[in-house]
Amino acid sequence: MLRIDGLCAGYDASDVLHNISLTVAAGQIVAVLGANGAGKTTLMHAASGLLRPRAGAVLLDGAPITDLPAERIVARGLSHVPQGRRIFPGLTVQENLMVARTAATYRAPGGFAAALAEVRDLFPRLAERRDQLGWSLSGGEQQMLAVARALVARPKLILLDEPSLGLAPLVFEAMFTAIASIRARSGIGFLIVEQNAEQALRIADYVYVMELGRIVAAGLPADLAQDKAIERAYLGA
Amino acid sequence: MRIGAGLLLLAVLLPLFIGNNYQLGIAHQALILILLASGYNLLLGFTGLVSFGHIALFAIGAYTSAILVVSYGLPFAVGLLAAALLTGVAGVLIAIPALRIKGHYLTLLTLALGEVIRLAIRGMESLTHGAAGFTGIPRPSVLGFTFRSGTELYYLLLACVVLGVLFIARLERSRFGRAFKAIRDGETAAEVCGVDTAAMKVLAFGLSAVFAGVAGGLYAHTMRFISPEFFSLSLTITLLAMVLIGGRGTVLGPVVGAVLLTVLPEWLRFVKDYYLIVFGLAIWACTMFLPQGLMGLAASVVARVRRPA
Image 1 (spheres, chains in turn blue, brown):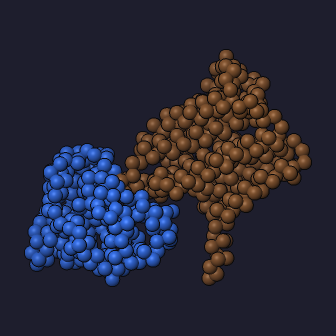
Image 2 (cartoon, rainbow over the protein chains, first blue to last red):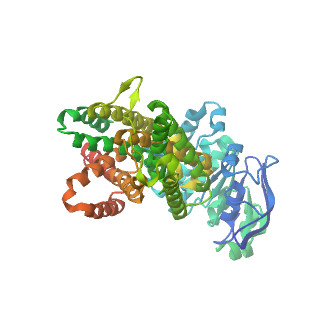
Image 3 (tube, chains in turn purple, brown):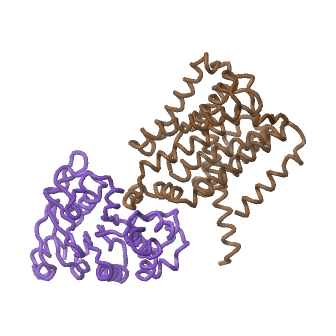
């Protein structure tokens, strides 16, 4: 489904990512763990078209999307939920969702209405706040809205950047549960980058560990969780 | 909506209460500036792009219509349509460099482009009569009817304003309006939501330029005299103040701002040019305390009255 192949990327004079390769199979939840500054967000930006990679390729369903602009990549079925949520503060919840509509929203059975119904099932709180402006939402609600916005585009796979950032433990636990249930219901795959290893290990099918722009370990969550050395070195546990 | 209807009723009845041609002239100016400020709000308030070159587009509209009607003898309607089209094209051309640069650099670039356009107008003497100004522009005339009296002209301008404001109200509720605001609220987020930010910025520049072109054409035929000096930086600041004080990103904000800032200097005549200090303080106060301007204040007052805490 998503294959990242020898990806190198950076900003101006500094190289951040060195030869990153990873795959996410259809309907898989894959986590990329690593400390602050490991290059996780840069990886997300390079995959979603916000940052042009210097070398390597990003393939979605076997087709290269490496040099497409961000909005075209969304249309291909790869949605990005950026770090810090980035909801539109001056638009209502409903308008935030409306902006995120794509051609795929309408190709899916039931169109936008069906997408809204799904969002309502997953996040009833958002339905209650339908006509409130984005800035008035709590952090947890903003994260829900950011994920909901990605769902409206009917993606095959969602890139999720630090969903736990700034959220209370109970709130981000609920967030991860929602992610697992989205996958179970609609078969959407996830590539999640996280500093919070515990929650990511709980729902992920496969885990990569990043350090200083390189992938230094990979494996099943159960194996990695037992690998105390890796945990100490990279997960800060 | 109700505020808009109230304002419209007031505007329709206003000529009954206006005593003299001088006051009617101020009303004409206010209406033209509503159109100009409403278009500018599409850029500044909806899309979050700060252009300081907007007055140059207004000037292009004014000169296009004046030249076509006076020098080439074309009808007013053709002049106005050409003003709208040509200014729209100029707006799109300005948008192209604007796609590559952001923030203050964009503002500086548009400031420079605006000055270049103004100097070019002054320089092309054979076409524009240069610094001396363009005189003898006829009053608007449509299908043989000439809007000769001040009251007739007032209603023509009002009709244009109503059409323009209704268009913006409709645009705000459309996918384009939402995309503009999404870009304003976060360009990266808009991109990852699938918004074609480049196309939307070009559209915002183009539409706001068409408003400036129409306002410019109407201005030329209302004042019957235009000169490059009128389209200077101080008018840009006034325009900015209209949108900020009235309420950026709201449909009626520029309407309120344009009326207030056209009428206020007349009332503040006794303080002479010091009224600019008042403008400056008002802009400062609005950005600090009323980010949504007077219309934002009105909306929050209405909300508080309806839902007492």
